[in-house]
Structures are given as C-alpha cells and as structure tokens.
Image (cartoon, rainbow, N blue to C red; front, side, top):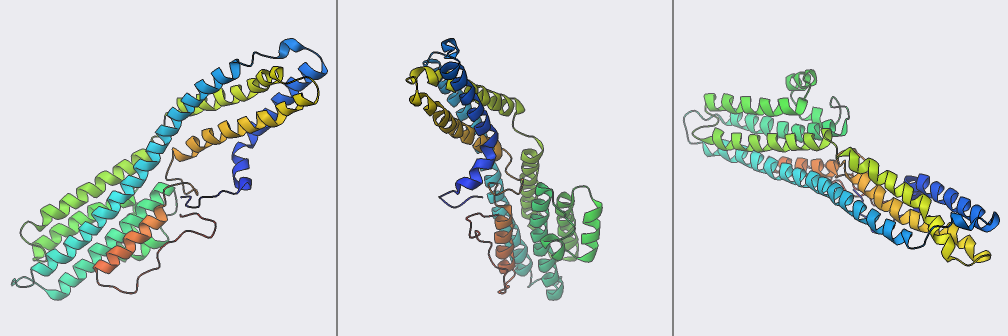
Length: 314
C-alpha cells in the first residue's frame, strides 16, 4: 500500500509510457499533415475534444469507482480477519481458564491446547496471505507456528488455509471430549470459525473472479482513441507557425492525465497481487500475529511491520 503523499514521476511514467508514445506520434502526424503538408481538412472541429473527453471521463470514473470498491472490500475483509482472530484467541484462552475448578481440568493439557490453537490461528493468517499472493506456503511465517504433523498435512492439501480451519474445528471437539472445553464453549468457537471461513471465501472470490474485463478493455481502447484524435482537434485552434508546435506538449499532457487515471483503476481492481499499491497483507498478518501472541502472555513479540523509507507498506 502506498502511504506517502508525494510520488516520484520516474516511478509513474513506466505505467503510461505506451499512451505517451501514442500521444507523441499522433501529435506529430497531425502537425505534419496540417502545418507541413498544408492539408487543413485533417484538422477536426475543436468542439469534438471536450465532448469526447467528457464521455471518457464518465467512463473512467465508473471503472475507477468499481476498482476502488474492490480494493476497499479487500481491506475490509482483512480487518474482519483481524477482529475474528483476536476474538477466537481470546475465547480459547478464557474458556480453558474458566474450567480450572472442574474435576476434568488438567492445567498442563489446557496450557498446551491454548498454545496449539492460538499458534495455529496465526499460521492460518499467514497461510491465507501466502495463498492469496500465490507464494510458497511451505516456507515462511506459517510453517513456524504449526506442529510437524500439521505442517506436513497442510502441504498435501490443495487449500492449506481451509484445512487449518478444519483442523481447528477438530481440536475443539477433542477438547470438549477430554474436558478442556465444556458446556457451550464449542458453539461460540464454531461461530468464530464460521466467520473466518466466510472471510476466507470472500478473499478467494476477489482473487479468483476479476473485475469485468469488458470495462478494462474498452476503457483502455477509448482512452487511446481519444489520445489519437485529440491533436487533430487541438491543432486547428492553434495559430499557424510556431504556435502549432504546442500541440505536441499539450497532447502529451492531456494524455498523461487520462492515462494515469485509467492505470489507477487498472491496478486497484486486484488487491492481493503483492504489489506496492495492494492491500498490505504482510502488515495485517504481522499485526494479528503480535496481538495473538500477546493473548498468550508473550512479551517478546516480533517487530511491527512498518512502511519502508520509500513510503510503501507491504
């Protein structure tokens, strides 16, 4: 995620270099036809430019709003994952501790259950992040929080994160059977697992189902068509001679503005691709990891994930 307020133009130009090349080429062709070859008929009415520009701006606004909605939904889903992970860890710790007065309570077993469940929840968060980004799930933060059996079994599954939630459910009912959990504990814990499963499914929907490609394709085509026609509309409004050379920088300036707007919409519609403008899943995962370890009473927490010196939060 980009957190800085100022941008280096050198980082922006590569995103729109094709549109700038089209603008430069089209404006030079218009200049050659009208100014050098004297074909005045090549100049289009100036009023055509604002009409086309307004229509394109409406189209771009609609597409960018849809893209921003997808990005915001991705961020909201991970905020939900953070909240339900904290609730799940809190319930695990408080429920097991609440049964210490019962004959079935075993302090060592309860402590082991708390550690196992909360750490597996941390592993699930990291595993989901890796799956969404298409990264290797066998290495990294997820594996370090899993028992060896769970680590090996997760790698045999086509959806390791979903299996970890299934494993959490199995262990809840194991704990109900041996008295570590009692009464209606499983109902509330299962409710948390249900919400986490729904949140995972919605993240996978955003990852697997792209924004309507028709909007992306035609927005790009219409933007390029507008850039091609723009210099032919501008050149007729400029006085013959040296003033007509302004058609080149003016066209490139307008092309830059429209191309940047189009590119912003294009890159924001897929929020889990591990790019600098995406939802900061690494920062979310680390924040959840720290919160859940603190729930277990640990004080030596991993450092919080902070923005880089360049102003990006991964």
